[in-house]
Structure formats: C-alpha cells, structure tokens
Image (cartoon, rainbow, N blue to C red; front, top):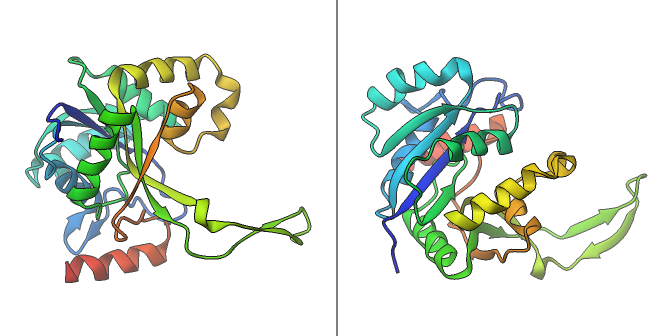
Length: 232
C-alpha cells in the first residue's frame, strides 16, 4: 500500500564538527550532499512535500544555491533549525499548514537510501503507527564496565542499528512530541525520533534498510560516499 500523503522533514542544521566542514552544503562529485538527499527523497511517489530544517545562517544559501540551482522538487519550506535535532524537527512540524497522513524524518546526511526503503517504512507506519529503517548489527557486541573490562557479550540477533527514514502517523507523532516537550528533563537522551514515539507508549516497527543507506559522519564516510556516487 502506498500513500501519497506523506510530508518529509530533513533535519540539516548540524555543525558537521566530526567531519571538519559543513557536510550538508559540501559537494560530492559536483552535487551538494543536501541536494543528493532531497533528490532521493523526492523520487518516492509517497512523498508529497519536503521541509528542510537548516542552520539560520544557511537558510538563504540553501534556497538559492541548492534548491533553486539544482532544481529540487517537492520543497514546501526551509525553516530555521534549532540547537538540537528535536528542536529542528519541532520547528519543521510547526511549519506544516495542511496536516498529512504520515510524517517521515530523514537525515540530511543519508543520500543513498533507496526508494524501496522509503516506501516500505511509510507503509509500515500506516499499519503500525510508527516505523524506522534500520541495519542488522553484524559485529559481536561487548558490554564493558567503567574500566573497559568486558561484562557481557550481547546477543546481536535482537540488535538493530537505527537509521532513517523514520515515519509515523502524523496525529500520533504530534501528540507524542508535545508530550515529550513537557518532559524536558529527558531531552538530552534523545538520539532519534522513534524514541519520542516510544516514550508515548507507541509501537515502532523496524524494517531492514538497504545497506548503502549510511550516514556520512566522518571523513572516511565521505571517501566512501564519493566512491559510491561515482559507481552508482
């Protein structure tokens, strides 16, 4: 089942401190990272509109030098992001004028997600209320104490590395986000949007992502992305 009533939010207000440069606007083989990501998200028939949450000083640049220059489609708005991911997503949510059926959040630094992964995540969100793309954990995982002495070997068969997109029924996600904002004390522990849905007692279904859907975080990731982009 495919729904054409899905708004995508792309948080792109990070500093890129681990990369050493502003990765969102940096080009991979001639195309800005953000443009690659938006083009991939736009390719999904389910996505009816996209809202980008950008750093305040980058809003105009992204509009003129990325969205307009690279003829990006389905952009509804570019909003000012916050200091944290949750603030950026909340700013984007508040900018939605016509509520969609599904909201999907996707990292600006994940340009190689497949359309199949996007569609499957949205489909499962319609059915279960929430769904995220994720990767099966392959390495053996060790739990250690404060002295880095191994305490246990974790069963990896039940472990998944969360990725994006993460999609949710809009009305339920808005309610969960409002509830989360009333509990600001837990804000520092939030690392993805599914946690907010989980805190509200909602179900989140995992679907297996395409393996190329990596998040570009380190200089090594950037080298991999350049190589992958050439051969794609």
